[in-house]
Length: 200
Ligand SMILES: Cc1cc2nc3c(=O)[nH]c(=O)nc-3n(C[C@H](O)[C@H](O)[C@H](O)COP(=O)(O)O)c2cc1C
Image 1: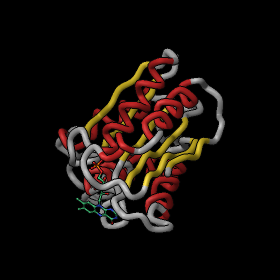
Image 2: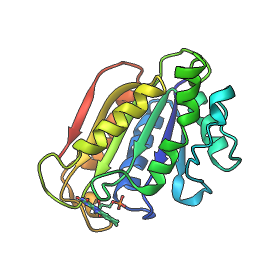
Image 3: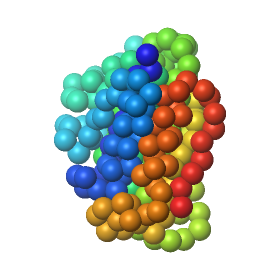
């Protein structure tokens, strides 16, 4: 059975990325996947302190809600990050979580261990929306997200990106964004490694 982990990075409850992520996990569940969504805004997440403690054993010494996310990553077959664009990057909540995976970087590159504890294939997917309708809106985020998945040995499997979506709930007025998210969830839960790109 495929386990799908959604990481919701928006500070706005029930906003556009929350809605897309919910459709993605609903699509995955319709194919029999076990799904879990973590809402970063509800968690206590410290920023990385660059104390370098993780270089010794690959374990972050900050004992907060990130400890649960490390376990969630290990258990997941599919990891879906959802974040709106904020100042051309991911949200502060999402960036804090990504920086805390420095301990996984240490596991892989310093300690030469699998960052997520084993070598089974995991897939990563990215969902984003931005208020502005400009070319290359998502390029800076994509560099970071692809780098993140690469570092934790998760195979990048595509994205859904929607520009010109600003008001809370505006994504529901898009002709088929929610449908695209549902179908992407179905595809990723289906176990094929197919690349999936979509949006706008
Ligand atoms: C602090 C902040 C910064 C933002 N920066 C950008 C930006 O750089 N580019 C953009 O297109 N939209 C920007 N937006 C707009 C959001 O991406 C947009 O409202 C989005 O629909 C919010 O998604 P959500 O409902 O999932 O939170 C910003 C919004 C906030 C609150």
